[in-house]
Length: 90
Image 1 (cartoon, rainbow, N blue to C red):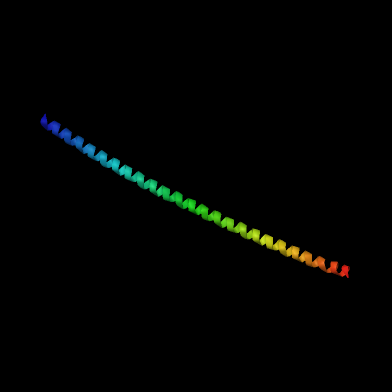
Image 2 (cartoon, helix red, strand yellow):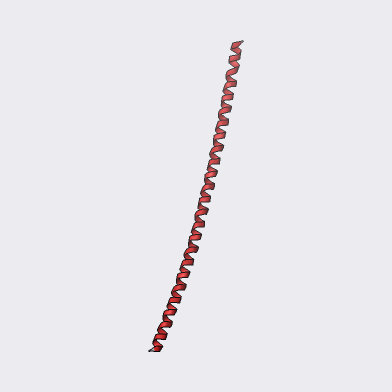
């Protein structure tokens, strides 16, 4: 009877030890997964921010180009209209 109790106690200790080790491994794996997922999310957000910055730069350059073209068109119109106006004024 004593031998069965000793064996049973040893078996319970082994099960408790293996269960504890299993839980620790599970927790460590979960922590590693969460850290890797967070890094992936941060990389994704940085990529989106970079793409948004590039898009803003493209829009700004297009706006500047459009303004410059409008200025050149106005300057050409003023130049073309100023000649006949001055000729009429003489």
